[in-house]
Amino acid sequence: MRAAQARGLDGVCITEHDALWPLRDLERLASEMDFLVLRGMEVTTEVGHVLVYGASAHRPEMATLAELRAIVRAERAMMFLAHPSRKYGSLLPDDLGVYFDSVEAQNGTEGVLQNTDATRLAAGLSLPGIGGSDAHSVREVGVCATKFDGIVRNEDDLLLALRSGAFSAVKL
Image 1 (tube, rainbow, N blue to C red):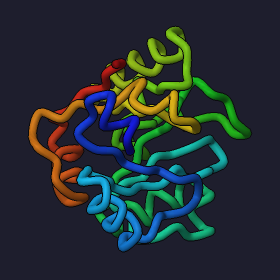
Image 2 (spheres, one colour):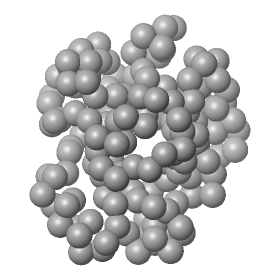
Image 3 (cartoon, one colour):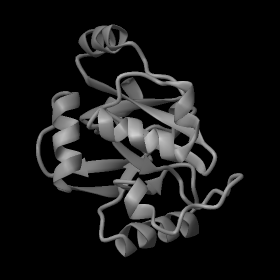
Image 4 (cartoon, rainbow, N blue to C red):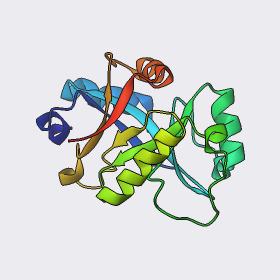
């Protein structure tokens, strides 16, 4: 949190692999740090990692893209293909727009070519891409981020902002 604050971020969204941090823990951390801390998940599927915002919990059936999409739609959550240049077991479906709300266009651990390809993919879907640090260490925090046109104060605001499309992926 200190690194995020030092780098000028207004908040962070922790997207743990296949888990959703307890809201109570994040609210306590946000209060202690006087900093916005939101939660999401990085769900592992047969086609790769998917960033999910607004879901209530991780469930084993989320491991398949079709089931994940059904759960996300039922909960009015959102899902974004994470670091789309990485290749996993199954090929991505041709109709990405049916499954994903968009893609992660800027990822802090990817290279320039991978991020350029991801940005083109988002543009090809006519969707704004999100940005994320994909931080697994302090030095990686805030390398890339999502810039919102409006103010995000909580998870509801985050979902509204993502649904509005009033955001962009940025490399800092």
